[in-house]
Length: 631
Image (cartoon, rainbow, N blue to C red; front, side, top):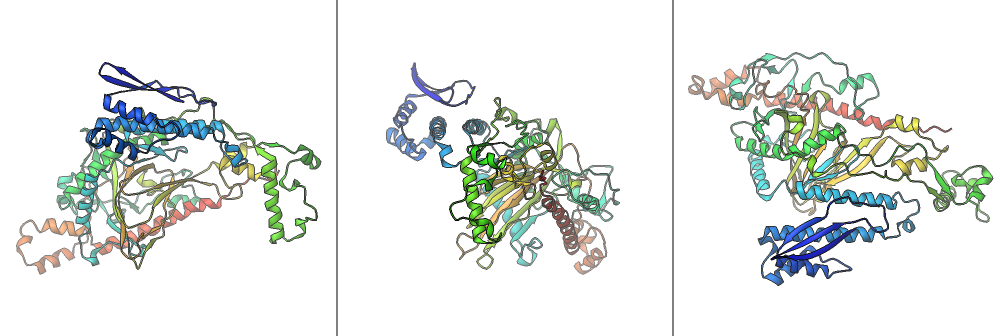
């Protein structure tokens, strides 16, 4: 529990939040007392808030009271606002926690999957997250084995406006030149996408003896040697991509294509893009490069946590190993007659004989429902309790402001910018497919998503799921024959279904940034027009971090392959800039490399088809169901 004290010290007041144990619980915060030094005005307002013993004023009511007392707005004084908001949050959390812990939860849902000790740990986690947010403005969510991190402060209005202006430059093209993503029914507009002009083995050219700098990249268009198809390495697939056959495993690593990242220098204290962003002209859109650098800088602390969590640096250990599923029987006199506890031990009502019906009849279904009701009322599952030393493993000190990824001096980032456009004729986006980003040879380890603009759409969410450890659980777990209900209650899996565990979803509203490791499968959920009489849209920037330990072929090695970039650069020099355009066009048309947009789109279609096969193989993992044997 938290106690509060307010004392006058000279001309100032000291507000102290004292950490104690929760009443009637095992929760111990273990933190130090927290003190805020405040002036008389804030002390007067805090005294007013303290008068609310059984309820809390809303933050809006606090702001109104502040204006009534002092004739000015909280927003005019940042230190006042911060202190008041912290005090209000502390009081609110304390009151909410106490109220929740005193509720008779067991009476609301028999065999509910939470206990008082679990609730204690949840409140402790919330307190830890509140401290992380206060110091970093980042909020960890979706903790399973790894972290998803969100923030609603990394995209201030000023930055969103600059991103909108930048996107407008890319969007300002004739309708016939708009690049609608294949298969999207002209709903997904690609502004910058790595699937156009990717690295194509046996087609793309590479310069291996020097680094192609950003300012000189156009000078190297068309140069280099054709890069041959690599030999296929031996692979042991990670669980999230492991496929059923050896051929499927091989397809997860492409020997034909690779997305091209740009090289980013971290040595100077802030990210600097050193090589061109594929499909973003380095001169025409130079201003966008600065914006991407800024987004990379804002991604680094969360990316660093995502990568370190993938190395199990912040390992969650809420419970000990569950070796056995146990139930407490409250009707031993009934179950002893049949030498075991089963749902169909339910005493039948007079005249009831649901077994006589077929398994599809309403009589049988009603009997099964009554069996389950009886079972849930007479048998209580023994839920594993949190470990005594269970602690939220992450705190603000783990978020670094420099020396990311074990002090590497350079990273590689793949950039994508895309819009989803809906119209009254096409009012709904049906959502995406479950996937992880890229293929194995791209070594994408983390993603950053920046939702910088939206209009007239309903709530949109990004869902996450992961694979449970099927073989390990099946082999070590002791359970009664047929006790699928107990297994499902403890482990949140479908004992008769596939081994994928849904972790939940995160709202993706405008102004939100989202970061996650490329281990969880994720999917964009469906959304539609809020007002179906007018258009709507959602716009994002996606940044994919290549594993800093495993750099890949980048735009620092492969000169621009876009033929229109090459032609524009070529026409700046003598003698081509002085000859008739018909002759220039005839000359450039005979050049096989760099290549035109039509060929780039054919390559993209083939690349997308290849990746759909890989994604289908990954989804086929769902067909590998749990095999809890009858024994």
